[in-house]
Length: 388
Image (cartoon, rainbow, N blue to C red; front, side, top):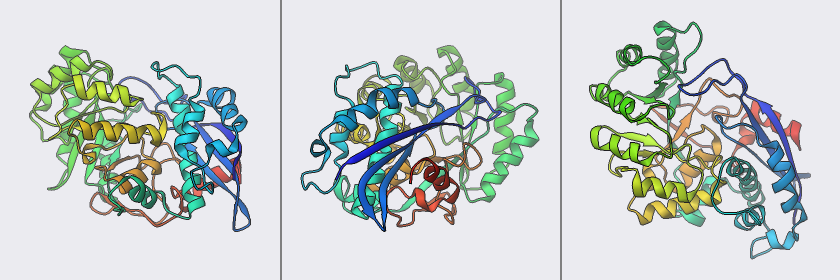
């Protein structure tokens, strides 16, 4: 068996919204299909993947650098030891051949996108849901398909005042989410406090609000926000400063007693390790948001989880960024703390298989082969249009 093609298409996921740092009016992603010569039900097995929002499509890197390496490789060098399936670790090593260490940049997104599609294909060839395969290979042997999810939104939008924010958040709560998230840092502190208080006033017992600054603040501003936010029972205060400013993160953790979250813009195990070593993160309360689709894929994420274990962190403190089904599968298979969700944004790439409902902040994954994209009609239609 072998990979016969890797197909990429750059797709728009633009939206007239912004966070504290960027607007999404020109946002794109790469949709990828890994086509194999394995046939099931009269059709070739195809794995699909895409990169998370916030980083643009990676078509040039995929088509010019990583696709040729995989297709030019000896097919036997990419198979598992039994010879009847792909080995994602070998495919990953092939993609990264002749790449210098460090400087992870955008290549981590390109590799992570292909890696997602490879894992989807591997689980389909094996006839298993990916979350079950992961539990058997790398977890405790038994997947837990019930996964915590929170609703991410609360973006700044032209003409969107407090009433618009309340309406948005009410919609998430009515759909069963127990934690909602909103953006801060794109308005003055006094205005953000008004927005926070407007949402907190809506919440019932057992419901919480998280806030996200998207790396906007310098240290004095991060501390000023931290002092103001200390008055509220927030689920977390996310990515206050530049993701590589570990000193800022450590200083904030010394001053802010509540839970902090960061990591979505760290794209390698080494960068994640530096956060753990130097960022003052607290394993009893803080949250790690590494996103496999942006950080070299699941192969690298497994290394990151091993690193975290070495430093005394539980995988249950990881709630990945991105809102995609790949991280849901990882959460269910490897015991992560949950996953982000975008109920109304970046569709059809976010969300869950059709019929899956949020129940008191949790979803239960159906037993679909692979990642489960085939269970989401609008998404699989886009994927089939790319390759089937």
